[in-house]
Image 1 (cartoon, helix red, strand yellow):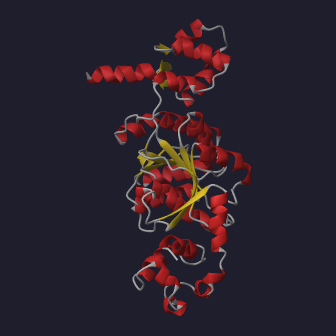
Image 2: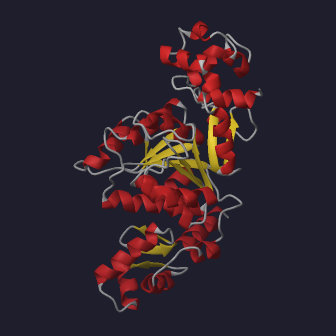
Image 3: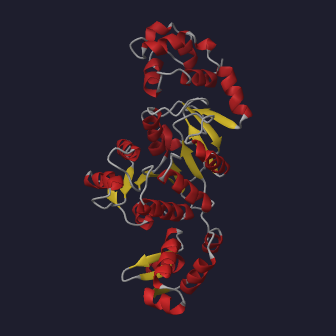
Length: 371
């Protein structure tokens, strides 16, 4: 038996995690040796239920697991292989095995964007705005494909035609939530859906904190859009701190229950950010080679006829609201809504005194200032 197969078998035994495997490897030289050692030797390291499973490892359906993965186009890699993500390998409890549907992008900055499953309109709006702008820079958005914020940011990245990575708290044969099966397929075609859990693992509640350490571990930093005090997003943020990663947090209204976790994180020392550009500046990020140029970026975004009309008025300019309104024969409330939509899509940027500008003109002005 080769080392990879032994790692897969060990990963299929409930109760044996990365921490216990490290201790077992202090007693044995290889994963194969662990399987061939009298299981009772590990009684002080792993629970009795895992000892019993280890005794019967030959009865585990590991051959079917490997074959099923191949049949469904799923790649299994171990912590010893070159394809294993470098960021993830640096955390203390890195998973020993990863199941991957699709391909984890190479040579990208990875930013985790997380939040509540029940976002407010503000949370939904900001999630789409941040993910869209960051993805337009070629940044890979990492999240958990849960309902709410997670799903919004994955879809925003896909609209920008930028790879995104979803980390599951279940096996790839049990996509959760089930309504996101099509989303998972789209992500796999333009990035990757990954998990450390064997294929048929159900989405048990205790799987998700384990999933969160992979989200933060894979990423260069974590962005919390909107999170309650008991949100899994807070777990991800705290894990990121433990992993020496930066945590960026949007401020929330004091009376918004879904955002109390954000304000708590800010009290704890997280970076308060109000725009995605602040994150780019803080991390000294420049567009990567895969980032779209301005014309490609605009063409990749679907706009309504009215959105095109308003954007064309602003194209290459900086204008205040009254000037924009004077160019259009539409109610003020409708124009304001369209401007908000364009900002969410990353095409324009708002400024003080109800001023608005084409994002490209803002970038050009900054470049001129540097010269």
